[in-house]
Length: 120
Image 1 (cartoon, rainbow, N blue to C red):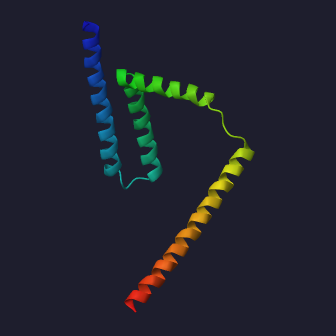
Image 2: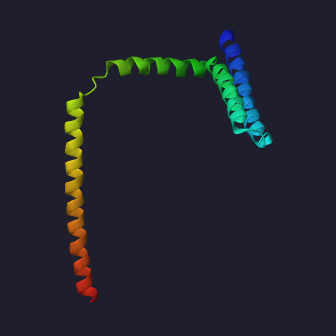
Image 3: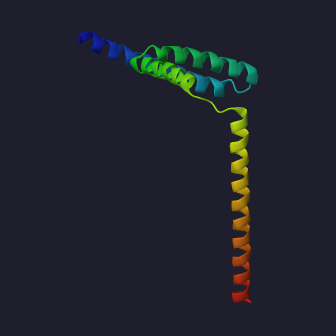
C-alpha cells in the first residue's frame, strides 16, 4: 500500500515536471520570437519528446501506452476491403449523393417557383 502512495506522489511530481516543460516551451517560443522558426521548432520538439518520455513513466502514461499497443494489435485483426470493393462502394456513394443533389435541386426550384407565385 505504501508503494502505491509513493508511486502516486512521484507521478504527481512527474506531471509537474511535464507541465513545467510545456510552460518553458510556450514561454521560450514567445521569448525567442526573433530567432529562426527552425530553431524554435527544433527546441519545441526536443521539449515535447522529453515531456512525453517523462509522462510515459507515470501510471497514466503506462496505461496510455498499453492502450496504444492494444489498438495496434486490433488494427492487425481488421479485414480491409479490396480495391474492387472500395471502388464499388465509392461509386455507390457518389451515385446516391448525385441523386440526392438532384432531388434537392428540384425541391428548391419548386419551392422557389411557389414562393415567387405567392409574392408576385
